[in-house]
Length: 328
Ligand code: HEC
Ligand code: HEC
Ligand code: HEC
Ligand code: HEC
Ligand code: HEC
Image 1: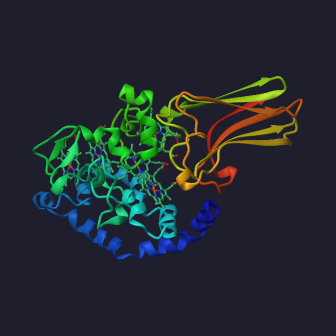
Image 2: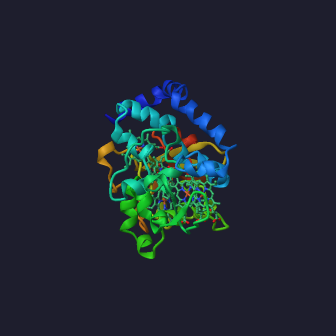
Image 3: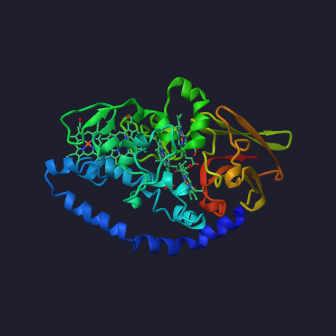
């Protein structure tokens, strides 16, 4: 079942994107976007519930969001292909283009919205309040056009957890939850200036979180031992997707640089859609240990921890979480 799913995912991409971008909703959104920028603020106030209006006054946040995975949570080719294969079910789509989650309630599953689907998880999905009046904010400001209302829910992990269900479950049982370190603390304040960023990246390549996953490698009785510890990810690693794979790859080269051995230990393979398991993930503060026999007598052993977003990617396309060379 899962193999079929992935094959379909690969082949359907191009067609779907063509379908998507020739869509009416896409054109309509651009039309609204152009007119907004020349409107007066009083006019904007009455239309402030529209997602695109946020752009004209909050360009920095908009640009960050625009580069974030939330902006592509509907249009992404992988996601469209998956919807295609699951029959464009409302159930699948709800988290990918929802009504404001604070309106539908953080204790309920998100609800698919009627319009502007291409903007995915947009400003209103997180900030929108009932009736389209006001936006959820850390600090209120009655004079601003968008009427920000102080609401602690905006910076809670529950806001993210309404969609990121498995990761939220891991997090809520962890020491991070006890310490009050929220999703946004790590994912939206990951720059050196401590400012909020809407880029919401997965942090693996962020300098502040580079050592979240640590790998120690050493020799012991004719073997290379690799110990991988989850020190700083606020949940199990890899995150929540069934399609992530994590492996340790060991390449042994002799003094002439010739590869004498290539070994691989799969820590996490793909898990079936509904069979999501935490067994094969590295839990918070957990260390896993892998052994590799040493084959060469002189040369270099390269040990890499590789994460793949999709199982069909080659090793060259994987994210190198960390790597070390051991000289013999
Ligand atoms: C006509 C201009 C305008 C529009 C349109 C607008 N805002 Fe605002 N917004 C402001 C101003 C001005 C402030 C106050 C800034 C400040 O206090 O530093 C503000 C404040 C905010 C805050 C609180 C910032 C803080 O520091 O706590 C949030 C959140 C926010 N806006 C979100 C939105 C969203 C989401 C939209 C679209 C639905 C939107 N705004 C549309 C002008 C606008
Ligand atoms: C409860 C909310 C929710 C529902 C329902 C949901 N998704 Fe998602 N989906 C997410 C979140 C959150 C992510 C991002 C997770 C991540 O990147 O770790 C995501 C990511 C994806 C991705 C991208 C994976 C990647 O590796 O980049 C695909 C494809 C996808 N979903 C398809 C589906 C399909 C098909 C369904 C219906 C079977 C579905 N989603 C239902 C929340 C949801
Ligand atoms: C995934 C949810 C999410 C989306 C989507 C989102 N925001 Fe936010 N936003 C937040 C959270 C959470 C905070 C508060 C973070 C904190 O301080 O802990 C925030 C803070 C803000 C602030 C005040 C902080 C600052 O950056 O000055 C503004 C303004 C804002 N958002 C505007 C927007 C606009 C405009 C959009 C759309 C382009 C948007 N947001 C999309 C969750 C979101
Ligand atoms: C309305 C549903 C929803 C909410 C609320 C939401 N997300 Fe997401 N998030 C998604 C979806 C869907 C994706 C996948 C988008 C894609 O792959 O293009 C995603 C992707 C991400 C990613 C990137 C994952 C990756 O693999 O690169 C991060 C990080 C993230 N979200 C963090 C957050 C944080 C932090 C919050 C709370 C402030 C939050 N999200 C709130 C639906 C949501
Ligand atoms: C202590 C910091 C920290 C906290 C708290 C935290 N994260 Fe993460 N998160 C990380 C790091 C580091 C990564 C990169 C490693 C990885 O891919 O799992 C990550 C990865 C992710 C990913 C990408 C996973 C994937 O496979 O695509 C998503 C989505 C995500 N986090 C969402 C959340 C949500 C939602 C919360 C709150 C319930 C949260 N995170 C809390 C640090 C944190």
